[in-house]
Each structure stands twice: as C-alpha cells, then as structure tokens.
Length: 357
Image (tube, rainbow, N blue to C red):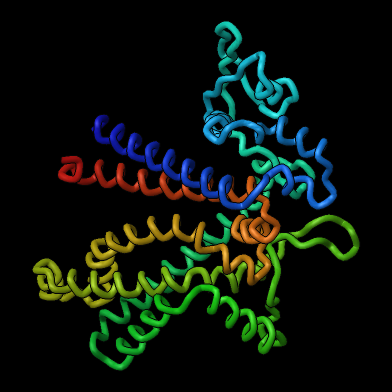
C-alpha cells in the first residue's frame, strides 16, 4: 500500500512539474517584455533596467526558469552573493533558514508566486488568498445543489422508467450537459435577476461580500450565491441524474432486491435501506472529479455574475496582462485538481486492493 501511495504521489509531482513548466514558457515567451508590462506606458530605459535586474528578467531564459522553480519550491537555494538573495533580506520570503554551505543558503518557505504587475506590487499569494475562498464556497454550493437535486430526480427517473416523466428528465439532463456555462449564466442572470427581479429579489450581479452603503464595512450577501451556484451546478446535476438513474436501475434488478420485495418491503423501504447506498458509488466517483473541474469552470460564471472569486480574477488579469496572477492562479487550480484526484485514487486503492495491482 505504501508503494502504491508513493507511486501516486510521484505521478502527481511529475504532472505538477509539467504544468509549471508549460505555464512558465507559455506566459514568458509569448506576451512580450514583462518589465514594460509592470511599468506601463510611462517607463524610462533606466526604470526598465532596474525592474529587469530586480526580477531577473535580464537573465537568460533557462536561468529565469530555474529562478521561478526556486521561488515555487518549498525548499529553495539562495546565493548570498547574487541578487536573488535580496528576496530574503527584503522580507519577501517568509522563510526559515535550514543551513548555509559556502555562499549558498538553503531555506524552507511557502511557495512564492511573485508580485502582481498591476496591483502596486501586491503579492499574488495575497490576491489568491482573497479570492480562492469565494470560489471554493461557490463550488461547494454547486456540488451540494447537484447532489441533492440530481439524486432526487435520478431516483424518480429510475422508478418511472420509460414514462413521460422519465423522458422529460432525460431531456433536461441532455440539455444540462450540452449548454455552455457562460450561456446559462447570461440566461439565468437576465431572467431571474432582471425579468423576475420583483419576485425573486435576486441581483444580476453581485459577490458574497458587499460594501455597506453607510461605510460601515462589508457584509455577507448570501442571496448573491443562489444564481451562480445553480448555473455552475447544472452540468454536474445532469451527470448525477444520469448516473443515479442507470445505477439504481441496475441495482433494482439484483437478486437481493427481489428478495426484499418478496418479504413485503415497500418501494420506499427498499430504496432507503438497500438500493440507495449501493447506487451512490458512481455518483461519488463523478462528483470527486467534478469538484476539481469546477474550480476551472467557474471562470465564466464568476465573471458574468460579478462574483469576486479566482475565476473572475483570472479574466481581469488576462485583460490587463497581469502575468504573475494568471500563472499563479492556473498553478493553484492545477495543484488542487491533482491533489483531489490523487486523494480519490488513494481512497480507491484502500477500498479495493485489486486496483493497487
């Protein structure tokens, strides 16, 4: 079992290394001069040189790549003689020195995603820390909606197989999986936030926290979560309905279900006591993958509804070419996706020894 876990962790680290490599070269080579992006249009040649020297933009590309890996790595190496040691002396790294060998200091620290180009030197870590919790709340809410409604309609669809209600639910599921999230977001925002606003009292746009009109700080506005959570949950909802229906139909044909019927148990008792828990395995498998995907899929939903999450931050950063935020956000999302999938694989390996090989 330990070998299996170490193998999965090794695959995850290799995958993450590949993601970081692709992200670095993609956003370093294509966009242009990062020093000019940081300074804007009023830069002088002297200012450009200062920025390039400070952040290592004047170094060869492979050296910049090694510096970036060093910034991201929890265990990093710093030369006491070179400019990258200034990250320690200026306090940009909250690091603990492990040991020093010659002119090289080895430290342990949190990953450093550098500073935003457009937010007056604000660290990318701080930007992600402010927006990621909002995205997580949105994703969890969407998953809960998808599970509750999806399991309910999946059970109904299985119990009334081939009826008009079953066919209607299947049509809804197909539409839910095929309609793009950004289109659903626009439609829901317009219909429920504008056309029916006097009845729903929901806003077309709005985030979890809103500023008080009297300047008394921020307050939580839970109703702004309803529409984006529903829209984000539509696609996994459709998948849960299909999986639950098919799985339940298969379970209901098992011999032990026939035995339960022969003993006089009602349909409700059979579903609750026997069939439901055995039908949930494929649903749990799908949801574990969908939760990770939602962190990336929330980009358009957050932007359209004005939800101040990591997805909206990525869109804003793309519009302003704020490369450190884009790179940091993509790496964080990829890391969470990898961690969730490896955790699911390890759990499967514990529950089913045959998977471990």
